[in-house]
Image (cartoon, rainbow, N blue to C red):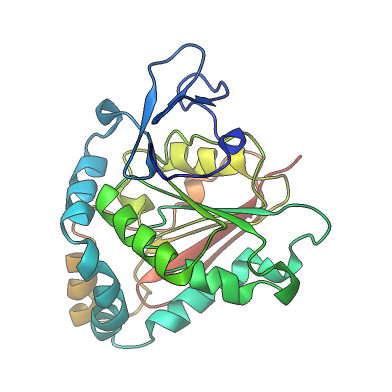
Length: 272
């Protein structure tokens, strides 16, 4: 049996939206084929859903998971010519407003595109002391290679409150309005349908909670060298930019800002 021990009540079938029952190494709903649990990860995406840019980027991340974190830490600041990994992450982590999480009930945070889990210790550090180790954190990614890195990090840090799932950001396997914070970093520009992914982030977030999305956008006014390096980084996207136009209808408190020379942060909330 797979070692995954997350609460299946937090999950739902991404096809029919019905509840799951666990049977051995699989999650079953009332109408769809079983969803397997392999190597300790629920596999809640179908291969036929992975098309176009999604397929290209998954191949890239599956092939280079161990190089990803060193590249962000050392190569990205060199390409930008300014800033650091920490300054970039601090720029968007503050928009999650983790200091304002409720203290009187269970709290859940979702990172879509969790990668190797680099944000997990930063979430923990930003929480109020009374909530550390108590907030339930869920991480979803399309890439099994990146999730393997996240599992290693979770085991190393001893995080019993972190649950990882393989799935598709366009069809999240979670219930409506179930998370107190929802965020995504570094991939939406390569999604086949960014608007659908943003709608899914909004669907699973509680009304009023900050939803934060971060990806590549070139800071205006930089010279041709930075432009060329930026385009090398964003080869998969014809027009990398902050997708304000794709924010779900009715969203409030929309804030788009540049958090480094190569990255934007987009924050919005969904109404009740």
